[in-house]
Length: 338
Ligand code: NAD
Ligand code: UDP
Image (cartoon, rainbow, N blue to C red; front, side, top):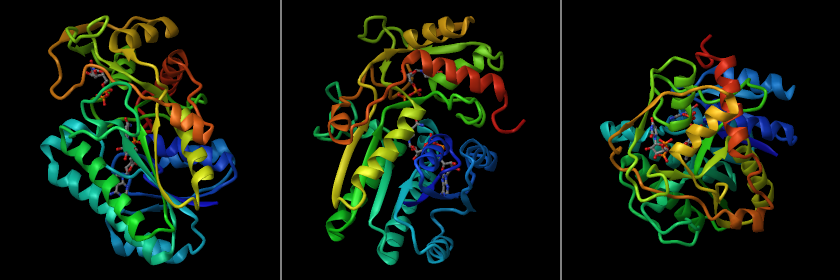
């Protein structure tokens, strides 16, 4: 298949492009590089031994997108990763988040209708469940996201669901990711956050590397066994494989298909920290800090639907996630900007 990947230079996008190429698909990336580097795409091409058609363009730029779709009349499907993703920043810059994430989804929907493209896979998030019973299961009623970022995921899902009603031949796949971590085992591609990381794993990794002084654990008085929050960490390569599987199984199967991509296993902040230290044989200083606003005590996926229907499940464990994160960190101490 020929797949147009928006946000393909980013963290999850780059790993997915690699999996797509390995599975024999052709890849066209559209990315404005607002949170990524062209070097990620170069490295994916080297790892796969195949080339990618790359456009530096903004998915909210309708004219630029129309020109790309007009140029490539053989596109079979879209994977839509492009979006802004920092929860805290979305509270400070709601207009930017709503505009970028919602308009991007609207422009792509328009392109699909205009150019007769029937398949789209969308990067959604467990945040759409809000505070809900655990494990989170696809059939639950969705919650109320507590920040603009989460709202953009909920709204984008709704836009695509409505588009699938109006275009009954479309296949819309909504993939709800849990907590992606890790890096490709080659150490060539990984997560390269700009500035101080917001997420736990890159923060731990930068403390271990001596770039940050210590980890702040946001709260140890939650109602969990060790008092720290529990999440469902999933290796980014498992996540990437999930996309390829979903695309191959569901292309041209009309309707809306929703899947959790998680492991189904909960790991606490303290457990992740100690696993990282043990696996990589190093010490990560930490301090207990106040709770972070908006954090939920514990959530993890019911990941059985993806296994049942797609024949996909996450196979890499917490040790692999910690080892691969650290390999990427040590080989690329400043991300792609060496
Ligand atoms: P990322 O920031 O590494 O990748 C996003 C990519 O999209 C970047 O390369 C960025 O330059 C590009 N982009 C952003 N706005 C764009 C625009 N208007 N036009 C063109 N390109 C644009 O983030 P990621 O972690 O790879 O996340 C990919 C997707 O998965 C996002 O939609 C994110 O919300 C979603 N998601 C991520 C996580 C996570 O924890 N990483 C969890 C759930 C969902
Ligand atoms: N966390 C932490 N210190 C940090 C970053 C995160 O203690 O520097 C905690 C956070 O409170 C949450 C968990 O780690 O309980 C996962 O946070 P992350 O931001 O990685 O993911 P999300 O909040 O999206 O689940």
